[in-house]
Length: 188
Image (cartoon, rainbow, N blue to C red; front, side):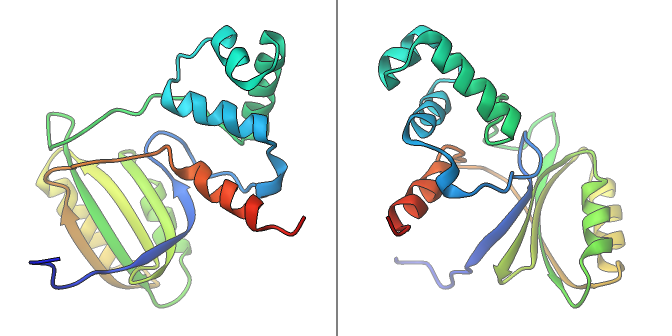
């Protein structure tokens, strides 16, 4: 594309914290059946969808839908929560991204990041960075203090940081695509 001079690729190996949930559960892709995937997809589009409407769309009774949802939540396969939309820095703070390259054990870096009360996102990855995080700060001195601590943390080799000045689009509903793809690729 005109104007693009570089593309950095990073694969998220494991989500350790996401915007409103906790650690991504470890699931076997084949453990969810088609009806459960349909229920999850419907709820991603409309989290307030009623059991009656859902039952019509997936072909279960109302109590069957209620039972499936309870089982999905209990198993950790699904969590229900609100995702706040943020398209720019506001009174809630300024979001900064951190790309971290490790030269050893990640224990100290993870402990530091997970202790941050305004940590929104943390993933372990492969590629340009070993860890990627998003943290919101209310003041620039808070940001500077964490950056200083992070750069002197045992096991941390490089820290790159950036400010999320304007978020054009955040999407959370695509996570089921990888489960469907894994199921389709699995031998019958």
